[in-house]
Amino acid sequence: MPVNGLGQYDDGNVFARILRGEIPCKRVYEDEFALAFHDIAPQAPLHVLVIPKTRYVSLADFSTGASEAEIAGFWRAVTTVAKQLELETPGYRVLTNMGPNSGQEVPHFHVHIFGGKPLGHMLVRT
Image 1 (cartoon, rainbow, N blue to C red):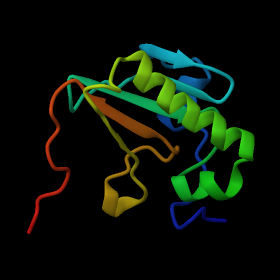
Image 2: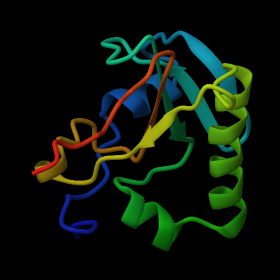
Image 3: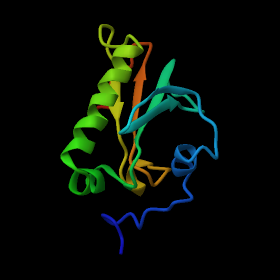
């Protein structure tokens, strides 16, 4: 059965393989709920991905299927990583993509943390 129109969770996706230790990553943070690591194709001086250690395809899937402890633990990990990277004072951006129109490339829910320079407006104003 499709998950929020994005298909079923694929245990062969790159983030699942990272979680299993089959693919290395440059870890920033890890706890029982989340793993954070540097993006291999950074879009800002600091570009870190935070992924839950559970099998969710998207934010919609995560928010409806995860336990309260998983949700709280994951978002705590996101803020812990931003603090650890000293991004709180200068500021940072948190982004998640969902589905093909957003550009989601890996079918495992994740957030991007961008920082390290002024990021400007996210979307072109029309």
